[in-house]
Amino acid sequence: MSLRGPVLVLCAALSVLGLGACADDEDTASPSSDNPQATSPASDPNATAAPGSPIKLMTLTSETGAVTFKEIPPSARAAAKAINDAGGVNGHPIEILNCDTRFDPNGTGDCARRAVSERVTAVIGAASPDGSIYQPILEAAGIPLVGNNPNSPQEGSGKNSFPISATALQFVAGGALLKATGATSVQYLGPNVPAYVGLLDLVKQLLPQVGIEFKGSTLYPVDATDYTQYVTSAYESGADSVNVTFVTSAGIPAFVNALDGGGYSLDKTPTTTFGSTFSPDVLDDPRVAKGVEGMYVINSGKTPTDASLPGVKRFHDEVAAAGAEVEYTDAALSVWVSVHTIADLLSKAEGDVTAPATLIKALEGAGPIEHDAWTPFDWSKPAPDAPLSEKFPRYFNPHFWASRVVNGKAVAAVEQPARFTGPVTLKAN
Image 1 (cartoon, one colour):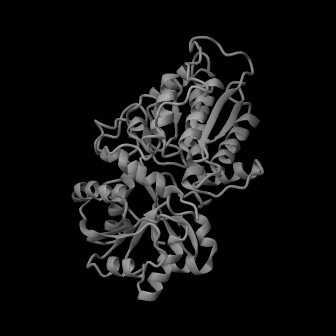
Image 2 (tube, helix red, strand yellow):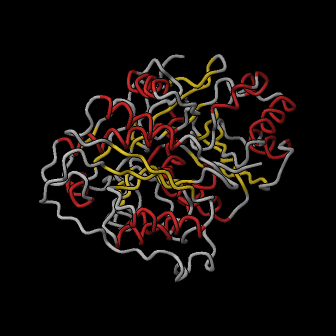
Image 3 (cartoon, helix red, strand yellow):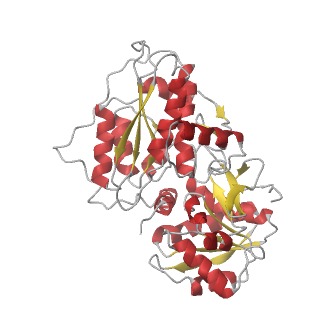
């Protein structure tokens, strides 16, 4: 039984709360001397790149280990193929390098040092709880992190960090979405771990901005297989809506079992969860799909499974053209958007487009970016109403998207992105 997005969501919570990263202290020690040392790649952004030289982008994520994000590398390659088939970036092909962290701190450090030795232009789609390890190595080498999900204080403040989402804010966005359904109060149902418990303090501080009452929380053990008592507690709490965080792939079927056993209806009690913790493949089980019918899902970008959205359709088409098999998740869409955004910015940049410094200059000067598959962000300034923006100035996207399970599929529940504090305008579906 493997953990997925929830690990990173809770690490993001630790980051926001200033409680440090998720890795153990022993694992975050300086790399051992037998590993390649991080040294800055020699590059002059004012120089001209050799004709046809590649723009190297590296995915840094776990393809093996306890937590896997296997969809990230092929999604990046699909974007690169589409760009290269159209002539590349002013004649320079995008080259995707993959490094498997094995969801291990040592593997993560090895991947960061490999990025330096490979002289990559950027690391993309980093999905790891060990940002405190890889971010300093990359920053020392002048290599930007693009499209990462900040899961450490280092990523939240490092000048080389250019995320396009801020997952921790989604816990508050869930309240804004529930208010849009007509709910006046919300109960939070989640795992009994320090990061989640600490996150609830942030939620309580920010929900008054949303205009919905925090009605307490119900915590379940991370190894729970029977959710009956926890679902009963949440849905009998007196709140007229529920926000739920799942931790394991078994959590969603167990949640459905408890809903069925208690006779609870998501139509009567609006319920939200998170795209980073809600894998679309769970809907392949008809019983589970029926059980979560009507559930709302908070996404960083647009609904990754809904090909009726033009940007998402292009994502699906490029994946198909690359002959890849990809689970359409927030993480997959994020890295695809990141590759295209990098290519678009470098196509207008001056100097050596393979140099990290050229890309950083382009990222910092890009201004507001509105991609048709994602929510708006601006790398030139932190989101003005993001919590703790002074302490974590690398939060550039205060927006979210919402999906809903309708007829067994996750489809768009909104027409436009919303700010995490609302207001939210829901579609009639």
